[in-house]
Image 1 (cartoon, rainbow, N blue to C red):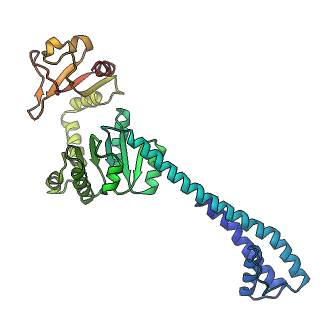
Image 2 (cartoon, rainbow, N blue to C red; image 1 turned 30 degrees about the horizontal axis):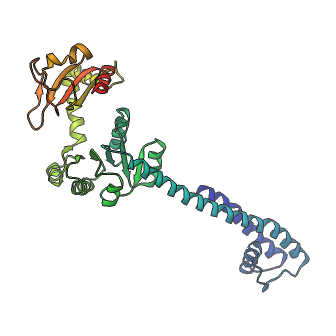
Image 3 (spheres, rainbow, N blue to C red; image 1 turned 135 degrees about the vertical axis):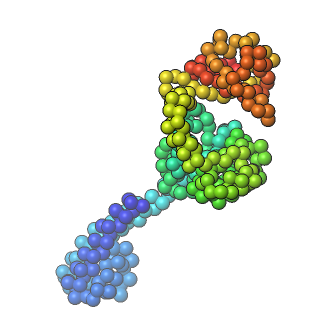
Length: 328
C-alpha cells in the first residue's frame, strides 16, 4: 500500500501540471484542461478537444511522452503488486496448512496479546509445538516474523479450529481479552474435541470462572489473581519464590522442574523409587507423583511404587532430565 501511494504522488503532479499548462497555453477552463490532460496521458484521445495553439501542441507532445509513459508504468506496478500479494497470500496459507497437517499433540493458542505472546515464548523455549490463532492482520504479520505457525481468523469459528488441527491437538489456551470471547472459544473447542485440555483466561469477575468451567474449560486462570498472589508471596516468602523461579527456568543455573509421563515400556514400571535408581542414575529428585484422579503424592517415600501412566514431578539438572526423557 505504501508503494502504491508513493507511485500515485507523481501521477497527481502530472495531472496538476497538465491541467495548469492547458489553462495557460489553450486558455481552457479548469474542467476542460483536466479532462484533456486525463485523455492525453491515458492515450484515449477522443478527439473532441484538441490543442489549437502551437505552444499547446508542443506541451501536449511533452505530456504524452512523460505522462502516458508514467501511467503505463503505474498500472504495471499496481497490477504486479496486486498479483504478487495475492499469490504470496495463497502460497503462505498453503505452507501454513502443510505445517499444521504435520502437527500432532500440539497446542492451540487463541489470542496474541501480552499474555499470549509470553505463553508462545515459553512453549517454544520448551520445544512444544503450537499454532496461534489471531484475527488482527497486523498482529498476524508480527507473529509470522517471529517464526510461529499462525492462522488468521476467529478462534470461536469451527472451521478455523478444525484448520488448526483441534482434533489432533493436546490442548487449547484461550487468552483473548474478552471473557465472552473466551467463553465462546471454550464452548466451540469442547464441542469439537471432548478429550481436549482447555486452559481459559478469566478477568476475575465473579461468576466468570464457573461459567467457563460449565462451558468445558479444564482449568480457568485469572492473571490478576495470580499476579496479586505472587506479589504477596514475594513479600512473605521471598526465598521460596526465588527458589521456584530458579526451578521453573532452565536458563538459570541449569536447574529445572519438569513433569514426565511414565510409559508402559519404562524400565522402572512396578518398581519403588528406591529400586528405580532415578536418584542414583540421573541425580534427579522426585518431588511429587500424580496418579489419575487420586490426590497428588507429595514428597513420595522410597518404597512408593511407580506405575505406568504416573506423572512424575522432577527436580534436577536440565541435562539429566533430558537424558531421562530420551531413555524413556
